[in-house]
Amino acid sequence: MLRLVKKVFQDLLDGHQSQRTYIPKSAPSAEEAILPFDPADYSIDPEVLKQMIDNREDFVLLDVREIWENKIVQLPETVLIPLKELPKRVNELSLQQEIVVYCHHGVRSLDAVYLLRQLGFKKSTSLIGGIDQWSREIDPTITRY
Image (tube, one colour):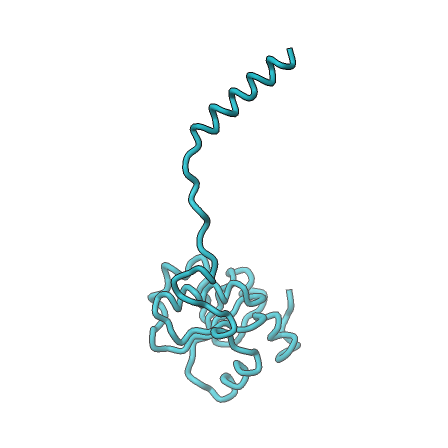
């Protein structure tokens, strides 16, 4: 009986394996992408951003966090475009404008900069450590979450 069950099970497996379809490889990593992308080349330290703000330099501060995160805390004069909305709202930004992108810890902002750079926004950079690092190094009065 056990042999019969094993045989039926093996026949099912053999039939299933022969009908497998091709499963493509996942999306390329940053190293495999057409556009070389080293995060260190496209990042900005909180101290540098602080100097830019203090010097009243002309740039856009882009928050790519979710709306609920922005309601908790945000940097002054921020443009909010959540990362998931960025591809369809990119026309709200200028190709000529310098853009500093931030999020909570700096991961989503790097994704945003990668996308922006591919779309021609060559003056876009990511805030290292996001608003969390900003609150630890620059402004401890900012709410951490």
